Image (cartoon, rainbow, N blue to C red; front, side, top):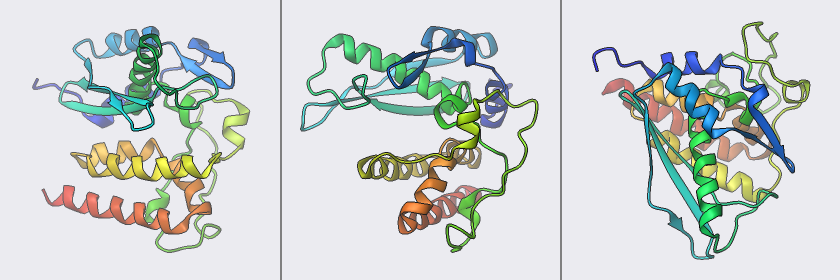
Length: 231
């Protein structure tokens, strides 16, 4: 299409949508209604499409699902393990568990376009990416907190005041591996910037725990950005 939206335009449109009254709590997890989320995307971009890739079955019997969302010329792929209510991977999940995870993966993919993003990561404060702060120590590179603009989607006081924290070493391992894939697969500077927006709170937390991993991701971000700018 000649009038295809850019990643930036899609992000700006969907990021402004208030999703707070469309969520539900199950245990310690908050879910956004996939039906409402897809309907909202259709209201703004009725030509959008999604597909599910082949399920990824791991050696331990757990399963990861993958969903690709296409909005005009803009495409993102998201993945999600089949998990129980405690956020743990399920071994040999049944078809119902896989089906539910696929729709949650779809909703998570929509968050990468901006819809309900703040529910997953908390409200992010606009500012310079910490990836460009050189080799400063975590204390020196801590971002300056700015007031949240009135136009920003409402976020709970808990999400605004408390920084992101990894719960386990394994969660950090998965995060580092996943971000490498996401950065490397970015096909434009805009897509790379959008992918960064989706993980910058986690990167700030990673910097405080594993500075070497943070530096590796920072260098990967810079190299990928330079390569995309040259092409």
